[in-house]
Amino acid sequence: MKIKITAKSTGEVPAEIIESLNPKTAKAVIDALPIRGLGSRWGDEIYFSIGVSVQSENAKDVVEVGDVAYWPPGQALCIFFGPTPASRGQEPRAASPVNVFGKVLNDASVFRKVRSGEEVVITKAE
Image (cartoon, rainbow, N blue to C red):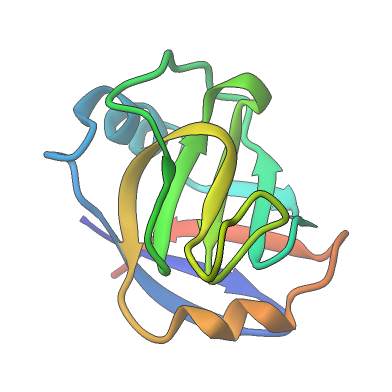
């Protein structure tokens, strides 16, 4: 399923929910759409609480640039676009294991423009 991640600083950024990665997480996020939150930055990661509760599902802490994930302890959606304070080298690394359920379809580095406190909206793509 195609989605749009929108912030004032980035405009609409296309992404895809890949249900086969973590089906329970993907379904919970899809059911919660549209989602709005105030983004927080942690290195090259944006995250915000989405009010959805899902358990760990194939969770991992080292992810890829462009991964869209759910962080169970914070009930938060995370978008990774480079190294975080927990990274070793250039790989994106979550604070603790996340459930990856999607991928940004274009250059994820556009999210470097987003500042903490900026509203981020996730909607289904037309």
